[in-house]
Image 1 (tube, rainbow, N blue to C red):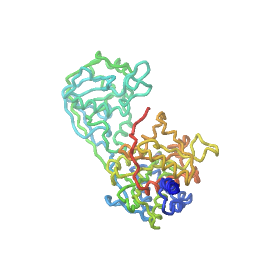
Image 2: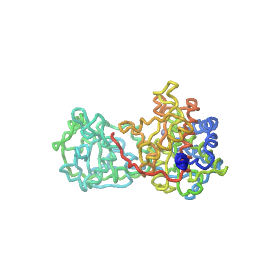
Image 3: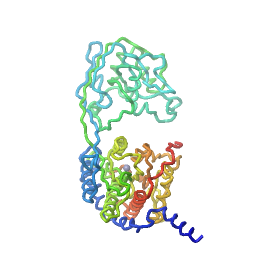
Image 4: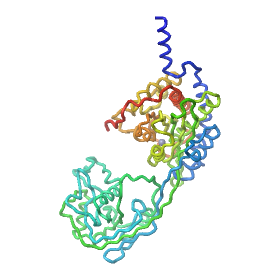
Length: 527
Ligand SMILES: [Zn+2]
């Protein structure tokens, strides 16, 4: 009996790794200070970084700053990379020329048709037949293609989608489906899949083209080369008056039907012999964006990894106004910088982590999680040896819903019930021991409309099976994605406490005997 008692205590203590050695974590957590966080955030969310929009000079300056910090702490670069930055390509397209010839006559560019640098691929198409395909939709609940053979022909269709009783037929709601947005690309891909060779498109709400429309379409936004639609065919957009000349049915009453959002039945169908030739050229510029990566190499488990991530990009500058993104996600970026310093000091003191800790600030988040998507598709370290990703996006402020003092000691934790049952045990354990924040799991409710788990960088780890926790301060409705998300609004004491809690969680996961078990399948839950 006497021998069992100490054993029980031993088992209890083994829950946290501090058993058998001094608990070094608090000493290094103490290096995470408001003063340091403020110093870094004032620069990251300062004028010089110009809002850190991905693909701009501001983003590159922020990357350089983070890299300099990592180096100064003594972090190593990943062997597989040439430096501290994992570069990934972005594209921007500019229209050079487009020419449309119908029945031997050159159609007047800018008046009767125009072309978009987005979507169209450089190339030509030549055909002898046009065929009207209504809205150009091919969905399980509604198809404009039923009974039509479009192979080798040029399809003609309207943008938009039909409604019934005020609701869109496909989405069943007051909002259009993916056939409305992104719309054109999806329709061009559907036509390509059916063998059409080109498309002439009519926007029901755009009878003629303004100079602004034509000019703004000559250059695409910077984009991530990802083809969600599949192969697309080339297209030109027609003015209403010109479209009227090639339609055989009554174009004006057809247009009325489309504007009313009515489905188009076979009475509107037509197919016609018309010689169409389209020649389109664009120029593609490649712009490099980056994820900044620094590591603290582990000791006896250095081939296993613990990730601390955040996004360092924000919305940039619009009409001369800087979107500072102090909380979003300057706060997470500086949290990663401070945690890197803390782990580096532990390593220098001879008590570095057992697993390799990877500090990664990504870009492209605000544009569509580009940097984390690129990383998870081109991982520098094996994802099956990556124990966890602890992602931090907005941890420096207070929720709109919480304004009274007794509710302010909180953080939203997302992902605690997904992928690994170890997550809440460890995270709550260290919090209870060191920081005593209130964890709010409301965003993990499967009924929550925000679906935050699926909407930020950590999801790119989760979709590959890596357990994640995401730390977040809530929706700051008044300042979210506004120029007013500034450094002076940060709640420093709470911010510092949250970062310390994340540090302790990382420390524990980096030092325990086993990687996190992966015992819960990832499901989307009810939406
Ligand atoms: Zn963010």
